[in-house]
Image 1 (tube, rainbow, N blue to C red):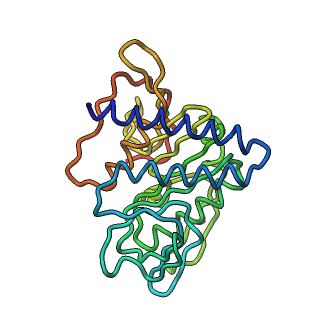
Image 2 (image 1 turned 135 degrees about the vertical axis):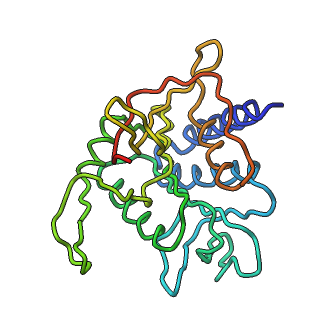
Length: 253
């Protein structure tokens, strides 16, 4: 079985289990969210190596504690876990490989709350942060929310000088490395963008298709991204065909 076939099979199993859960808990949104997080963590266990653990909980760094994280992927070791309360753990930031925030649906308000949480995690040294949305997310909505988000600029003394709604260099490393929107079947990936007016960093918007031009679940690329975060020597997955829509350019190189 090829790498692509493995991810595709896992994506199909995941989608089938989510659909089954919706049939049972369709009228209970909190239950859907809880079950969805469980299914996601369980699916990721089959991808990452045994040297990694997966849990929900909090990240701690120099006495500070993050807001609750839906999925934490961490390297196992004697100093990995600060405190453990069953499946809920407080993980030392130095051991965290990736954090995934899971949302049933996404609004501008919840997106901004997530960005604030990711900004704190970046301050803890957590570089790989992902946003997993079960509902819909369009390119237009994401672009609008990104450029309406206030990014205060500071002067040499660290005092806020002016509020700007635009991104600038240096890049905002606390932005999600990728955003997956399951219902829209969209995968937004933060990476280098080439345009007629120069090189940028921003989000590509990927529609993934196979050799017969049939759509492939965005989960396939999401799973690949998670594996890339936990393996130093893994090569990117060779997707049969990408349809790359106009990127969301955030800041110029």
